[in-house]
Length: 207
Image (cartoon, rainbow, N blue to C red; front, side, top):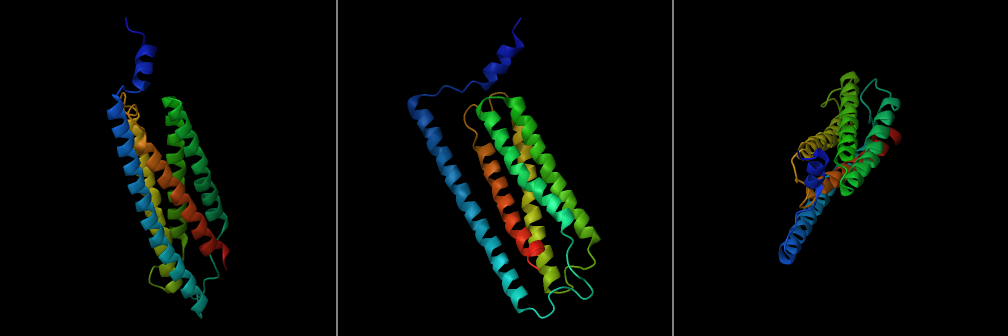
């Protein structure tokens, strides 16, 4: 009878390649990561244009907030921010476990990251539902929903990608040839967190 631990360990063992084949795989992964970084840079430019527009509009607005609205509540968004930012550390530990070929450690911290991202989205939905203004009320309301909504879409995408990577971890030998999907998803998640820090300062801290 085959030892179950032998099966599990063999699933984690790297695939053997010829010298040329292994070098080709690394070269292909480098190209993919470079392309992904270029994609993140293009996303950064989009967010930067939104940030600049928000700052310009706010500095030149006479009545920035909607009529009768005194300002955004900070406490709940701050808690959501702590959860989202902390998830960057959690996903880092997930990557470390994967590099050590500890799949269950990877799955635990990866799933925890997904739950933290989902909690952030839930908190944002609750905040939106309780706001007394709509998208078209004034410039502030429009930019608020645009910025937080566009960022929320990125968080949702990140959680979706994490779900795909988690599912792939149950495929035998799936990560034996490289971990590009996990690394790219993790990098995307860090990017989303950094963007949120800037957003939080602009929208909730800067009065």
